[in-house]
Each structure stands twice: as C-alpha cells, then as structure tokens.
Image (cartoon, rainbow, N blue to C red; front, side):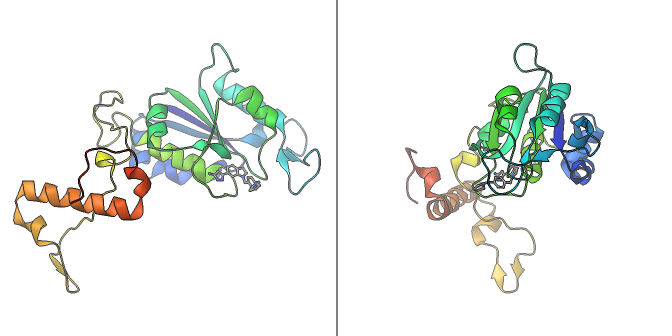
Amino acid sequence: MRIDIVTIFPELFAPFRETSLLGEACRRGRVELEAHDLREYTTDRHRTVDDEPYGGGPGMVMKPEPLVAAIEALAGEKGEGRRARVLLMDPQGARFDQRKAETLAAQPHLVLVCGRYEGVDQRVIDLAVDEEISIGDYVLAGGESAALVVVEAVTRLLPGVVGNPESPVTESFQPTRSFRGGLLEGPQYTRPARFRDLEVPEVLRSGHHAEIERWRHEQAFARTEQRRPDLLKGRTGDTKP
Ligand code: JFH
C-alpha cells in the first residue's frame, strides 16, 4: 500500500516511518509512506498556504490552489482514472472507526490531507477530496496527528505486516467489530504471580482452558456494560454472567 500525506509539517512523520511495526513494514516494502511539504506546491515568493476568511471571523483558512495542486499531483484528478482515494482530516468528517480502517486497508493508494489554522477552503473538498474523516469529537490544532492515527490503524491490518498472514485483508481474519466478540477486553496479567500484594486471579493460573475462556468472557462483558454500554445496544444472545 502507498500512503501520501500532504502537510506543512512533513518532518512530524519521520519517526513514525522508522519505528516499530510501521517502520518494519516500510523497510520491508509493504508500506510506502511519504509526507509531502504543501509549500512545494505554492507558486508565490512567500510560499503562502493560508489567507483570511471571506465573510470575516477569527483565524486563517488554507487557500485552495496549493492544496488542489498537491492532491492532483499525488492522486490524479477526481473522477475517472483517479489513482488514489483522497481523505481530508477534518473535525466535521465522518467518524473513523475499525470498520473504516478495514475498508481503507483494502485500497492500494491513499492520500491523506492535513489542514491547519481553521481548516481548508470548501472548494478543495468539492474538487479534490473523496471523504472527510474525524478521529473523534475534540479539536486538534491540525490534521497531522489524526493522519498518524489513520496510518497506524490501517497499516497494522495489512497482509505481510508483522503478525498478519500474507493473504489480503478479508473478514476471515479481520472481525468487523472493533474488539474480540464486539466486547471490550478484560484485564490481562503477566508474571510475577504476586506483585505488591496483588495476585493474578487464580483461574488464569489453573490451566483449565474452558474455565479461563468463561472467566474472560464474564470480565469482558462486565467491563463493557460498565464502560461502553453503547457497544451492547442491539446485541442478542448475551447472558449476564
Ligand atoms: C483541524 C481547527 C476547526 C473551528 C470548533 C468550532 C469551530 C481549529 C485543520 C480532527 C479531529 C481535527 C482537525 C483536523 C484538521 C484540522 C484545527 C479546526 C476549527 C472548532 C478550529 C485545522 C482539526 N478529529 N479533531 N480535530 N484544524 N471550529
């Protein structure tokens, strides 16, 4: 998969390209990740990327010419024959979730557009963006950290990235729900068995696999009910443990 990022801060992406799972995927050629400096697509002496909002108001808006030039150079023109799916990071966008990550992981080429200031001129969206996405209901200073979230969630699903089979992304190994069985995970433990007077639950050390499975489901259900009751809405067949 190829991912191009349009940003005024391309240097923010460097350590993520080199570190951990994503770094390994880049080195092994499973992911081609490149951050492009929006200012390279300006044509004026001052390399201007923003301007005052029409109609007044606080802050600045990203002007359309450099953004559309960058997107078209990287993704092709919108419509037939476009080479990539273009996503704008945007607090007004549709919520990004695990299902969306799975859909995007099936694409060969993504272009992620990061705004700054108060956002981008609407004509960028009208002319050159396929989809606006939000990682959550809070206001960031710009789209870069949101783009990193999308890159991380998508690339960890790719075949051949550490831990995944070589076969393409399919429902068979990627559940559509966000979490195992659609519930939050219960607590996890590793050694030592006793730490500062806190013991690992006996059942986990018992070796009784069926009992362990049942205990884990009870824990997962109780935690989900308490913290994320929204995940239980519309479920059938769950029994309160
Ligand atoms: C981004 C920013 C909008 C104006 C509340 C009322 C008025 C500041 C580009 C994504 C998520 C983002 C995100 C993505 C791209 C940009 C900052 C936007 C306003 C705010 C002010 C600029 C923010 N999930 N959160 N934030 N900004 N709004």
